Image 1 (cartoon, one colour):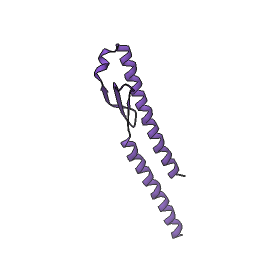
Image 2 (tube, helix red, strand yellow):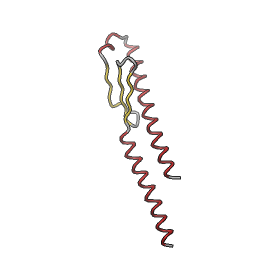
Image 3 (cartoon, helix red, strand yellow):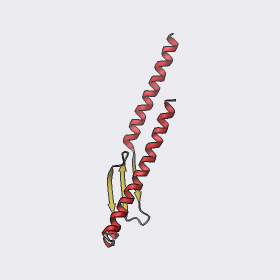
Image 4 (cartoon, helix red, strand yellow):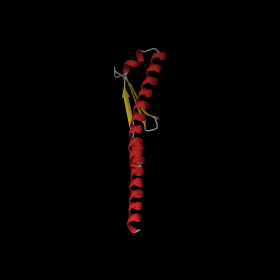
Length: 98
């Protein structure tokens, strides 16, 4: 019976460690996207929240609608990259729980 209990405790401990690693990894996720022309760089955290936005001087020559669309697109691409990183963390966590 002791060997069974030891195995159970070891399994639970391993899963807890995997969960803690996943939580740590989620907190470290950050993704950036820079437009091909380098004018806009957007950075988001693991939840897709904007944490940084850098605009090059050339954006002052753009129409407001174009600038807004390009900024939004850059933010969206950065958020997609963060979502991909989250998906990898979740996949690793799922494997640990199998």
